[in-house]
Image (cartoon, rainbow, N blue to C red):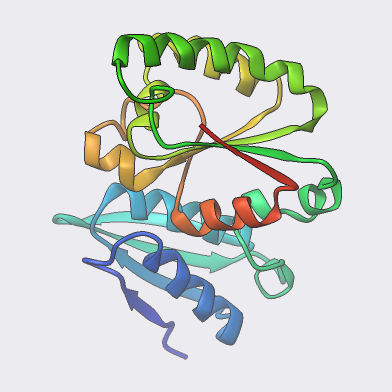
Length: 206
């Protein structure tokens, strides 16, 4: 049987992942090919299919990439829907889990210098939440903090080292030209972001 081919070129996040999810959920193909034309989609689709039990080979085709996914055993048919952030172990562990949503590298509005200092203080204080601190979601300008040299980078790295999940918007990284420079956190898509906010027991928006 000819494997399904999903042409996701020109589609904005999270449409490539959603199309893959629909195909896997409805057809559970042994082999699936996906064509994407931006690095954020390439990373998100590869990661998503990996969590559904597929081994993914990536081949560059001009300005696009062809992702060929081969199901490993029966994992692809039986794995729960969702990305890595929705693994069964994490779902079971969700009791009091705080998700911090960061849409900026600054806290508040008025003066960016002050806002940057407040963000550094905020990130440095988050460990006081203890085991309830589950995840940080970084979108828009907040993704700049994942690049070495940013004043908040070391604080984010310390949180990641302590086991806090850090999701970084791939579309945002691509917009700012930072996909290759990101050094902390996991590149993600809007499906993961929305699901994280839904599953958290509490969301803090700064």
